[in-house]
Structure formats: structure tokens, C-alpha cells
Length: 223
Image (cartoon, rainbow, N blue to C red; front, side, top):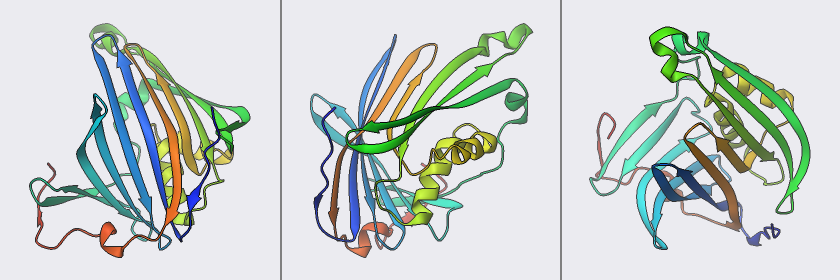
């Protein structure tokens, strides 16, 4: 892996992540463009990539001052929806049959960034008719604190990694020092593999309007 060199100057940060999903019945490439303002706001653009051409799927806005919600924007329909982020533990029945093992693998350097590498093993164990849901997934994540960003935004990224599992996992990752920005993410399940990696960092000054819903857009209840 070649080191990522930060380019440009300015108080705001721009990053690109490439995500590849592969499985028996799926092969998908995605690109994530992430804009972080020095004032604690974030804009995430998700693209699908086919034959080298990127098509915008979704835009998400968040604000460290209001961590319990994000805003999803659909530019093609000129609409937006407010997404309440529920940080409570999710489905009780699933949780009763799901075991998480979290371990710190070590400190590693990925693309010139100091990272803490942690591994999460998620095992689902049902009996009887629900046994078709049984699986064991392994997720490796490399988080760095080398990318300067407002602490509120950093907490959202750190907690977001754990909340994908549950609050207990989020707490264990934070205790291990596996916090900051996910430089690399590798998830291996029964039927597919997801590999996500940071590919670009630069600094600039973005207009405040990038982090706001454009005027004239109508609110909807999700897409």
C-alpha cells in the first residue's frame, strides 16, 4: 500500500473511500466522497461505479451538534428526509441469539496512517426453524486518529462503527483506542465479502451551503 499524502490547504477535509462487495450472486463497486467542515458538519456522497463511471445514489448530511439525526437528500426528486439515529440496542430477539467477540489485533500503519486494528466476530445461533439465520461474520477495522477532524464528528465515526453491531461493541472499541476514522474495513460473511479503503485525503475550504438542504427541497418520510 502506498502512503496517502494529504494535499491542499484549508480548514476543511475531503476524503474518498472505495468499497468493493463480492459474493456468489453479487459484485458491486462503490465510491464514498466525504466532506468534513471545521465547524463540525459532514456531507457524505455515495456513488455506484460501473465501468469506471460513477453515478450518485445518495447524499447524507450530519452535524456534530445534533448527533441523534442525519438528513438524506434525493437531488433527482428535490426532496429530503430526516433520519433519527437510534443508538439504543436494536432487535431484542436478534440480540438474544447473537454473540459478539471483540479483540484488539494491534497497532498497524496503513497507507502511512497510524491505526488501531480490531476484529469483531458476530455469531448468530438459532435453533429449529430459525436456524437458517445462523452465521458467523468476521469484521476487521483499522481506525486512525491521524486525520484531524472536529471531536464531535470523530465520535460519530467511532460510535457508528460499533452501533452497526450494538452499544456494547461500540464501548469495547472505544476502550481499545480503536477510534477516529475507519481507514480500512474488511467484512467476511457466509455469502459475501466487503472491502472498504481510504484512497484520498485533501484539505480545502468548502462553502457552508454544501452542508445544508438546498432551498426549495420538500421533506418526505424517507425515500
